[in-house]
Image (cartoon, rainbow, N blue to C red; front, top):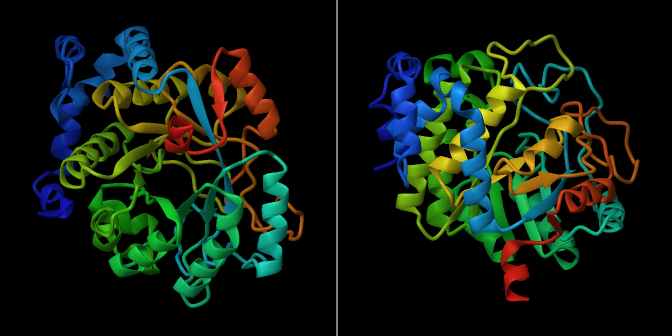
Length: 370
C-alpha cells in the first residue's frame, strides 16, 4: 500500500472540522499519552491546545534532550541552479518570472565549496529548481563527485527523481533527500502548481516511497506554511510520517517548518501562521514523535530562532544564501526567497553556545562514532 492509498481515504474538509472540534479534554488526553497517535495529534494542533503551549514546550524540551542531547546540527544550502520549468505561484523561481537564470559550472561549484568550507561546515544541502532538460541526472552525479571530497554529508532538495536514479546517487554518496508536498490538499494543489512536472500531485507524493525503496539514509518531508490551513496540512504530514516510519523503518526522518517569505511576485499567504502557532506546531510534532529530526531554516527571525532552541528543534541552517553562486559572489541571480536571519554561521554557533547547547557541524552518526 502506498501513502496515496491512505490519503485517498480521508476528506480534507472532514479532517479540518475534526481538528477544530477538539476540546481541552482531548488535549489533556493526548498529553497524558506516552506515544500519541494521529488522532491525538489533531488535538495537539487544534485551537484548543493554545492554552497548553507552555506545558507542550516543557515536554518537548525534555524529550528532545533525552533523545538528542543539548546539540543543534548546522547545515547550509548551496543553490546549484535557479532554472525551473514549474510555475509555482509562491516561488521566485517561477518560470514566468523574467529573471537571470544560472546553473553553476564545475568552476563555480568549486568556488562555492571553497567559500562554504571557510565557515567550517561538513554538511551541505544542494538545492535546484526543477529543470530536467539542463539539470540532469548526469549533472547531479558530477556535482556529488566534485563535492564529496569536501563534505561528510550531502543532502538534496531538488526535483523528484526515479527510484533507480536515487539508487545511483546514493551509491555516490547522497545521504538525505528533502521533498516537501507543499500542501496535502489535492483539490487545491493545482491552484499553486498550475504547470510543470510539479503539477503532478501523486508523483510528488510518492517520492518518499521511491526514496525508501532506494535505501536512502534520511528523508525530510513537510508542508509550506501559508498555502492552506496549517493545522490540517500538519495532520496529513504527521500521518505521512507515521506511514513512512512503519513502511521504511531503516530510513530516518526529518520535518521542516517553512513559512512563506517575500519573493518576486504578488502572492500572499492564504493561511498565515503566527509565531505562537509555529511554536505549537513544533512542540506538537516533538510530542508526537520523539525520534524525528525537526529542522528550522533562516526564513525565521533571529529572535524566534534563538527562542526555538529549547522547543524541540534539532537542526538549523546558518549563513544561508538562496541564489546560485551567492557565497562566492560569482552571480547576481535572483534569490528564491528573502532570508530573515542573516547572521553568519559563526554568529549562530556562538548563539547556540551562549544558550548552553553545542553546535554540530557534521552528521550525527559520525559524531557518535568519534
